[in-house]
Length: 220
Image (tube, rainbow, N blue to C red; front, side, top):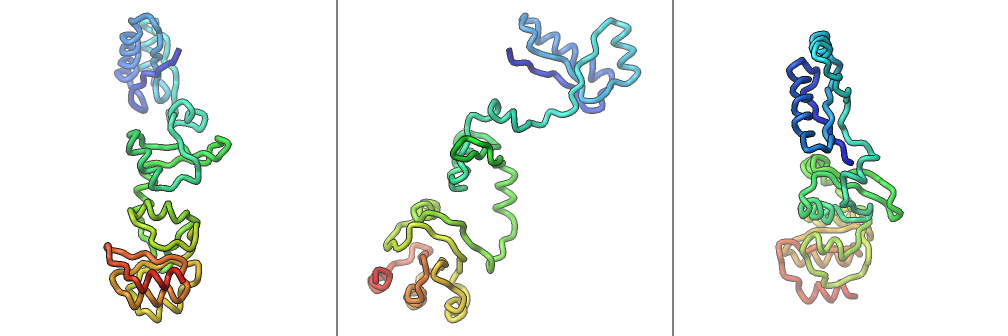
C-alpha cells in the first residue's frame, strides 16, 4: 500500500509536530493506516517532553523530500527519447499538463530531465546572433517547427550557422559555408546570391513570395 507522509514546516515546533500527528491520525480513520506523521527537522526539548508526557510516539524524521532518480518511474509515466525535437517536448508537457519530463535513450536509460524552469531560462537567455547555429535537424522537423513549406529540397538534415540577412550582402557571402542556413525576406537579389553561393538552406520569412527564378536557381 502506498504510504503518505504528513509533515509540518521546517524546524518544527510543538504546534507543527502535534498538528502532523493529529492530521495523520484523522486521515487514518478509514482503517488503512496509509498516512505517517513526520517532521522536517529534529524535535526540540519541548516537543520531546510533550510527546513523552502523553505517551505519543515521535514522528518519523524526514529531512529531504526532493525526488530522486529512482522515483521517476513512479512519478512520471510520460517520457521522451533524446532525439525528440524541443518543440515536441514542449507540446507533450503542455498537453499532459506536466512540469517535468524525463528524457531517455532508445534502450530506456535515463538521460536527463527537462523542466519548465529550464526551458524558460533557455528561451529567455541572451543569444549571440553571431554564434547562432543549429544542431543536426531533419529538414521536415525544422519545417514543421516553423510552420513552413518545402519548395526545393537538397538536404535531408541541416546543421551549421544561421545567418539573418540584415548585414550587407557581401558581408554575409564572406562568412557563409555550404553547411549554413540563411533567413531572408522579400529580397530576390539577395535570395539568388545566397543560393548561387551554395548555401544549405534558404528560409524565406514573412510569407514573402518565392519567384520562379529563385526556384529554378535552387533546383539547378
